[in-house]
Image (cartoon, rainbow over all chains, first blue to last red; front, side, top):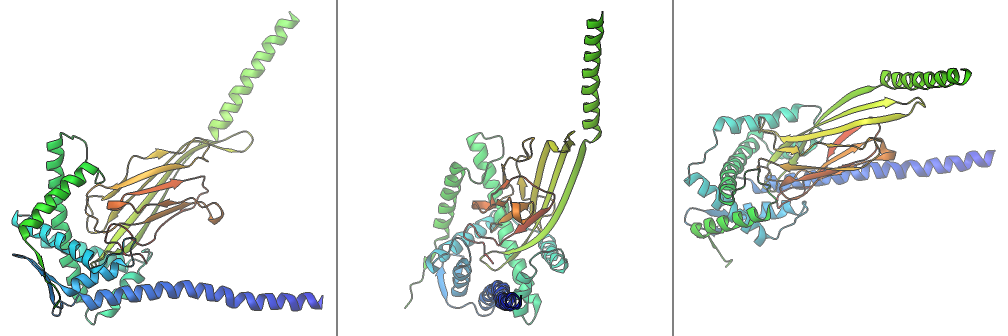
Amino acid sequence: MKKVIVFGAIVVACAVPILSAEQFGSKSVADTTYNSVSNIIYNNTDAEDQGDVVAKGSDIVVYENEVKLQSQLSQYSDDPKTEEEALQDIIEEKALYQKAEELGYKVDDSKLDEMVENIKEMYADPKTSNREVLEAILSKYENEEEYWAYLKDRYRITETIAAYEADLMKDYAKEEGIKKEVSPDDEKWQDYREEEVNKIQEDANVKIIEEK
Amino acid sequence: MKKQFLAKSLVAFCIGGILASQCCINSSAKNISKNKTKNYFFTDTSGAVMGAEVYMTINEKYNITSEGKVKYTSRTAYMWARYTGNANKPSLHMIPPRHFNSDGSVKNTFTWSNRDYIAPGGVNVVVSIGNDKNVTYAKGNKKYSQLSYTLGDSSYVLTPTVSGSCKLNLGVCY
């Protein structure tokens, strides 16, 4: 009987630290990731210091920190990018945004404010499952408003491009005589889009500045 | 005469039995709808936080058989999500709602697509129905946030969770 108690005590004594370590281990991995991601965001979103110019077109400028941000954050995604690949993505986005603006696409400030407000509300909502994501980002900024302003700028870009691409999709559907909704995965649509994007990028005439 | 009487009694007995069993099944017919909403953050590779709200509804119709077993007549799952800031247009929706098989044990595949094409990142939605021992799941991380999930046999717990955002060239996984 005594032996059984001693054995049981040993098992419990061993199991507790192992289980606790596992629990804390997974938490600390998440914490580390939040922290790393928020550091990358904070370090590369300073509006006053964007690093060197790495690419330039007629009306487009790409800064070093934008490239670092995209490339470094993508390492946490399913699709990690080199800096060269990230640069290409940024050029595409900037060219599309510029074209959309030229064509008169514009998103109301009130809509962008509403989007930011929605995020703030969600952050305050206890039923939001992973508030730590935003908490980690905001904790890096002395003034939270800097991040909210950055967010608004990003929404402006993505929403403007989205509106433009939605119309491109309609044009494609019209040309192809498609009456139902076009799936974004439609390969022909993707080819059509790629062709349009290539033309837009050519017009933007962006040159990559080689490192000295 | 005796035979005729016996036959009639037998028929009456059978009909009565059938009616009675129908009556009992019908009286225990259930129609239940369960809803669940959860919010999640995800980040695109420009560092912009996006929010996703995931809604789930499961409508179940079932009877309790005379042996006390659950017999599903219809189980329909609806799930959709929208990104915050786009309140009037659900950017993710499930098309089309599908049905479970009537025995309730059959897996089925659902697909969402990002109808409005606004998602700068994917959102990976994992749905589990059932307890941990009988986890069924949904996972979606296809291009343009297209999501698909599989539903299996379930108990009565709905647990939608979103794990990171890991697709296209934008989503960041936590």
